[in-house]
Length: 390
Image (tube, rainbow, N blue to C red):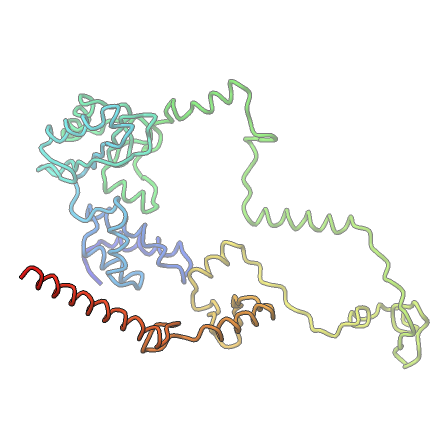
């Protein structure tokens, strides 16, 4: 295994992998890529090899994921990633002018880093904040309603070693610190998540609902969110109470004599053995001798769907011995349709190699004769016209 990464990164990698079931460990790939980016500032070839070896994948599989998502950088990135939205709404509001001003001020273009390694500039297709446009983000934290002047002030403060406060969200951090959080670890800086708050456009819907008295029926904001175990216990308790409330139906009387334990016939209508007063066995009560069938295991639909889409060693293969897979077959054709199809096949024999289907030799000879006769007539006509001219 490569020795590029520190023991802290390796320990965190093991913690990430432990979050997932043993047969679903490859699901840890996304946070692992953020983790290696947190140490190197980008996903290097060594980072790809590190993730591949930890998860038992090949480097092509890891590289395919790392190149698909834009938040994984494939070359060294600055301490602060400044993204300016240039999509439709922000562009109309001046986003392109903000980007052009920053590019000229920093002397870099899209996906390029300043010489001091502080800032990497990029234009983003959409930052999902149209109601705050034009917007830009610094390491994915929002600066809303920016213009060329305020954007330049932000990057100048970053280059000077400061950390301007975002419009919304927590305190600004570096790209590597942000990658640690994206890997699933808390921001350990003192008071890092104490700042910030929602913007007014975000709260507009809530304000209108409060103004007009709109709320969800029966909604109680203080209702605690129960765990799955608590919910299961409550459901079992409710089911037991429902079963206890149902009236117990008396068993139907037996029709005909029932053999008792001593071979004698018990009186008609007695559900148990003669003279014992015990209830009859289930087979005697139902007339069935089929063995009990184990109920299907308690799996959620999500688990069943996941096993179907991505089976593991414990999932039965469709072609395993003893496994029957239903196949879709066409419904049987009615008899009259079969007879009509057979008659059509008989009346239309398949074409041979010598001639198209339906053509006969006589027709071909007639066509050739007509064609040759027309050619002879045309030749004689030309000859007579030539003689007249002479």
